Amino acid sequence: MNDCKKIESLMERALYQELTAAESEFFDRHIALCPECAKDYEEYRTIITACAAEPRPEADTAFMNRFWETLAPKIKKIEKKRSARVHWWIDLVHAFRFETAWKYQLAGGVALLLFGIFIGNYLKKGTEPMHDDRIAEQTDAAVQQTVSEIEALNYIQRSKVLLLGLMNFDPATDDVETINLERQKKISGELLTKAAEIKSVLREPSQRQLKKLVSDIELILLQIANLDAKYDLTGIEIIREGVKSKGIILKIHIQEMKKEEKKLTPENTNLNNDTKTI
Amino acid sequence: MHNDTELVERAQQGDLTAFKELVTGHKKMVYYLAYDLTRNREDAEDVSQEVFVKAYRSLKSFRLDAKFSSWLYRITVNTCLSLKSRKSYSTMKTFEEIGSSTEPEAGEPGPERETEFGFIRSHVEQALSKLSKREKAIFIMRNYSGMSFQEIVEILKIKPATARNFNFKALRKLRKELAFYKKEI
Image 1 (cartoon, helix red, strand yellow):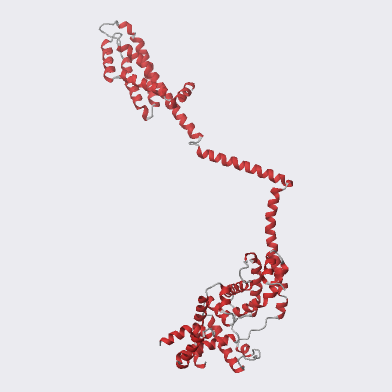
Image 2 (cartoon, one colour; image 1 turned 180 degrees about the horizontal axis):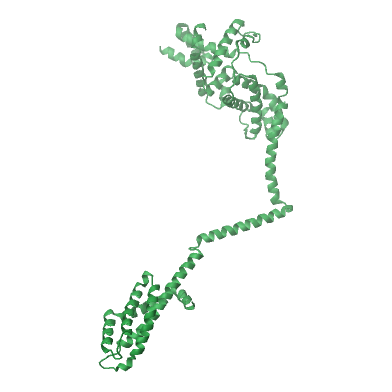
């Protein structure tokens, strides 16, 4: 049984007479004694011999004689394709090498230059933080904001002068003629007409305090404008108390300080300068 | 008479005469291998032409450390394998063709044995279709073309053990396919 397995492993080389002398002796001895292995060997050998013995028909003489004649046009076609491919490259190289092609060189140079400019512009745009339109928009917004604040501060400034006149008036000691109440009422009326307009442009969150102050002052101015009598000392006293209780003068001072701070900030310097020219 | 290496070198430099000499020297070998693999004269003629066209196209990539003939044979085997996949040709010979084979030479089997072998061969050829492409190519190269395993290894660039395994595997499959004939063997 073990020998049969060994014979199987030797079978392939035995069929082609490639066994060593010792292997061959062992193989032949086993085959002579084992009918199964002998049958296997015989069947394999018959197939191999049948295939090897097949007569191979001679090649057609005419075909062999004209073999090159048939092949040559195909070879020439390959050569033609190759040379066409090479010529394409040569033509391109020549176009940029020889002086007769100076137009190509010039065109190529111009094309490269334009390409460079295009790339340069493209890269420049890429590095810019914002587009011009956006900057213009933001500048406009900043200018609008500054203009509205300046108008509000002018309003406050004029109101402050008016209010300080009232606050510095002491009805107990001062002569009522010194404050010129009629003029105070007239100025208050003028300022009141501006108040609504100023408040409408103070829309930014940062302007909320300023807007509140404008409203407070507006209320005071309304009271001043509504003083009835020429010597309405009680009314003046009420206004004084109102200004005190609301801390309007203090708030005015704070806004003035903020304005001074903004003026000193470097980034607002140019903007403020610009707005002055507007 | 120039050797292959010299002719190949010249042909690689564009010498068409050298390539013509290579074609003249190898056309028959290529044709016969193509015939063995395709089992058809017309296909063998087409393949042998195609082999030299492919060889010319790739000649510059051929390295002289291998045999030119082995390289041509490899192209032939590959061309035949691809041809088989695109053409449904009828390779089976008729019994009349087998019977009308040429006269046996000295040492060859006599007419009776030859007829028996012809009958077996016709069935072997039918059974060959059951083999894989590689098994079939190796079996044909070894048993029809009479190439040694060493030559097959050089041509197909495979290991000797692989070539032997494929051949014996093919042989086993053919024996199985021819089981109906066993009693008559």
